[in-house]
Image (cartoon, rainbow, N blue to C red; front, side, top):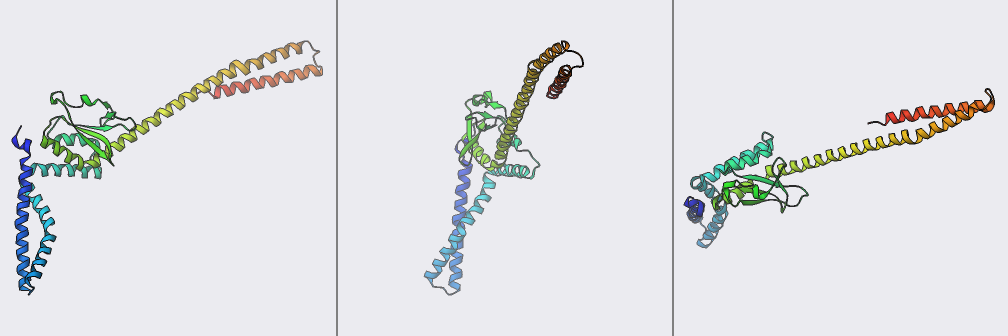
Length: 281
C-alpha cells in the first residue's frame, strides 16, 4: 500500500498550499486596497477599514478558486474522477446512459473491480438486491480475496436506501467512494425508483394471475353445479312428467298441459347448457 494512500498526504498538501496562497493573495488585496484608499485621500483608519472589508469579500471566492486550481495539480486523480462521474450523471439525465450502469461506473472510477452497488428492497427490511433485482447476501457481496468487505451506506432523505460494497479497502479509497456516491446520487436514486416500479409491476402481474386463476376456478365450479345439480334435477322432473303423461288420454287437456310443461323444461335445460358452455374460460 502506498504511503499517500494511508495518510492522504496529497489532500492535506493541496489544502495547505491553497490556504497559503489564499493568505498571500489576501495580503496583496489588502495592500492594494490600502494603497488605493490612500491615493483617494481616505484617512489611515478609514483606508484600513475599507481594505479589510474588501479583503473579507474576496477571501472565500479566492480560496475556492485557488483550492480548485491547486487540487487539479496536486490531486489530479480526484478531479479526473469527479469529471467522469459528472459526465455519467449528465448522460443519465439526458437519457443516453442507463442508471443501472452506475455499478460499472463505480468500478471504473475507483479502480476496484470488486465494487458492488446494492439497493434495499422496498418494504423488505434489511433485504438487499443488486441492480437486476436479485437478492444478495451481504456476506457474499465482496470478492473472495477482499476479506472483510467495507460498506458505504447510501442515504436518501435521511433513510438508508442501499450500500456500496468495496472490494479493496483503504482510507483514501473509502473517502473517494463516499465522494463519488454523493456525486452519483441521481443515478442511484433513479435505479432505486426503477427497482420499486419493477417490484410494483411484478406484484400487479401476480395479482392479475391470481384473479384470473380464481375466476377460472369459479367458472368451472359453477359449470359443475349447473350440470350436476339444477340440470339433473330438471331432467328428473321432465322424465316423471313424461311418465305421468303416458297414463293420460292422448288429446286430453291434461295431456296437452303436461306436454307443454315438458317442452318448457327441455327449453330450460338447453338454456342451462348454453350458459354452462359460455362460462368456460
